Length: 126
Image (cartoon, rainbow, N blue to C red; front, side, top):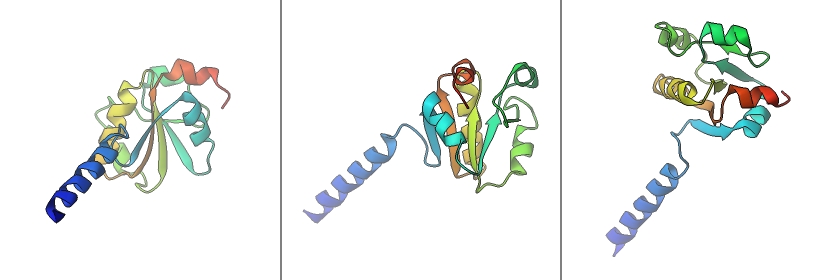
């Protein structure tokens, strides 16, 4: 009987972790929550679009690290892995890729805007 209870507990725990819809260390959010999060002290905003897209418009204070650049991993390796990073792109695809790469590199506090795109963010007051 005890074994059955332990197995049930493991199933419930594993479901609760996967039900959140993301990897531990990555918080996937929509536009309004993203804007709230980037206003918190110490949050570093990273735009993972191309340099051309960044020059055409970006969130104030964002730094540009192109996830498709061959130097992406080298650049993020120089960042403080314990800081909180808020990541966005045009549609949420590249920010998700960047978040996974950063998570695999040891980052633990990532906010991923993957429920919309930059056009939506740029319409909100930052």
